[in-house]
Picture (cartoon, rainbow, N blue to C red):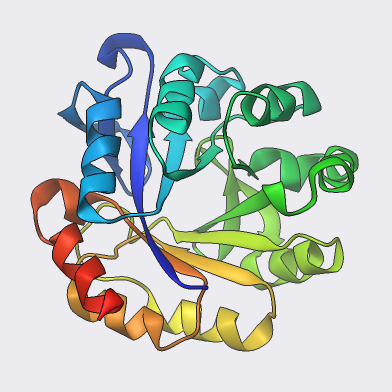
Length: 243
């Protein structure tokens, strides 16, 4: 299955649950694009999207769920398959999201630091558990991209596959939000090495990027800043794949 998702990032605090983007994961380089996340999600539906990828930036830093109500609205008031990441570090948080209409949760820091929790989540929810592999200088980044773990990306992906993870969302942080193209070579290598579903994220900024990623037999590609700036017309690109 190949789909086009759109990253819709929500944060709490001063931005009051707005749709925002970071540049290369830097919280100091944040652009607010819309103060009505549900309306953005509804526009995705009008454009023909079937999936939405949500990240709670505030939750990613402190392990809370400050934007739960916004996430619930999107999950329950649209037809979109909804996945959420950012600060999901306990089975209670997983339960909270999945019991409130979310279709899949993404574990990041917890997948790196707490193998017992990851195994328990997979055992309880199976394919509803995905893992975010955020890559910085070849290593897996954690805690909202603020720290780097000891795992290189390929070792970590191999471990996730062996533990039964079915979906990986792989982000090249150096490309994220930069509008300079995606890391096609990285995704080509990931696609060759692993048999699980891999979604490409970070720097998907043109139709050429999407076409190149599609040829790699990936599960999906996440469009973020390119949607908000108009560099990619979501409706047109989805229609082109439907024909």
